[in-house]
Amino acid sequence: MNTLALHNVAMLELLKSSDKKQLRNLVDLDDIDAVLRKLLTIDEMREAGTFFTGQALASKIISAFCKPITLNSIVLDPTCGAGNLLIEASRKLPIKTKLSETMRDWGRVLWGFDIHVHFIEAAKIRIVVEALNRGVEQDCDLKEAFELLPQILLKDALKIAKKELKEVTHLVMNPPFTIWPSPKENYWKEGNVNAAGILFDKYLRLLPINCQISSILPDVLRSGSRYNGFRDFVSNSMHANVSVWGRFNNKTDVDVFMLSGVISNNDELLQWHSAKHENTSISDYFDVRIGPLVAYRDPEEGNEYAYFHPKNCPKWKVVNSVTEKRRFSGTVLKPPFVVIKRTSSPSDRSRASATIINVNELVAIENHMIVVIPRDGKIKSCKKLLKTLQSQKTNDFLNERIRLRHLTVGVIKDIPFNKGI
Image (cartoon, rainbow, N blue to C red; front, side, top):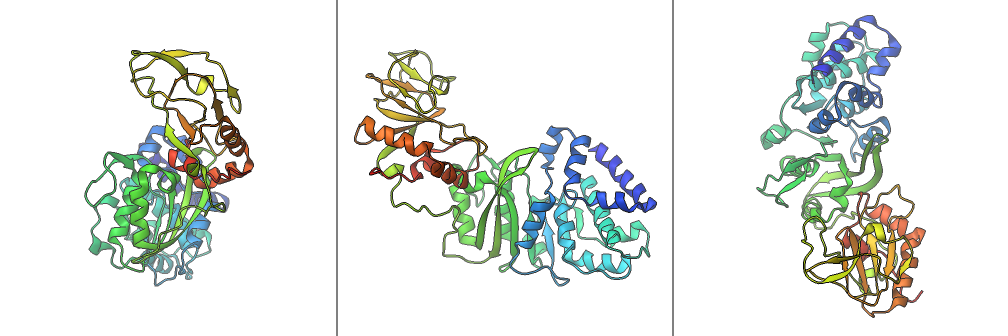
């Protein structure tokens, strides 16, 4: 992070130069991510959660508040980084003639926490630059201007008490997407979980009723099977809208969604996914499970069986002969059935890459495949399913339903399927 300190010094020097073009670049919400990638290693960025919100997403998330930001608001970003979301929030606020007056007004509204002092410094510098770029007169030195932003400060977002947040009217978040140990207390999952879920959960518990929330969260919280408890808790804690955004930016291979609403006691479940239009789905006609064989863990002992894994299952083909065998003492399956590769990305031409296994013997299926077994035991049903999985309609369903880089059993079960077609 020492390289970021040097960047802050360089920003202060630019402030003295009054170069209008360079000052505009300092508050370019798309540019700061590129700057950090030059200054920090990818490991440092991941550890700090420093993947900053670009202009298009920042505009969308600030505009999503149900109530507008005014000088009577208190807007908190508890993981503010270099201040992109606070800068965008400040663009909803009026300015006064002088810098000191403007900072005094903005300083009451804009709150931000971070555990890295150089990010706090960068956020304050850039907010001052934003005001200067909007035409205020610099009537005070920078030290005084920074002191007029007292609520942008070095703090651990996880160590905040409820009483500290009682005045907050708007929460905006783009929390880290890294993996943290579950805090366990009042929580919905043990083991390691997504940091964004931990932070969002905490602030739902701390913030006052009727506080506005607008947040950017990783799609695993919306789609992942491990996060059902998170979704239930959020549904019970706020009225909100869920909107799929897609990939965070072109250099960060994580898909995100926006969750915007108001904290309130809620007896209606949030609609995390678009409603299905068909009355029936794959689970009405097929049993769905993960392949039982874990190649790196299961010893090669027991009877020898036909063995299928992603590399020997050609896409959209019917496999009628065995090319590979393996000893296995676990659960084996009887064809015919369809196997779907679990690895899958929204950028793939076909999300549900599938193969029909139709050999006349028991087979072992690796756990990187999802197995879909027709309850009627017919190859005809498998072929109908393969046609469904190839369709653009299924692609569209999966791209809305799960933006992760893998498919889950639950999502496959819910794919619309009409056996009569």
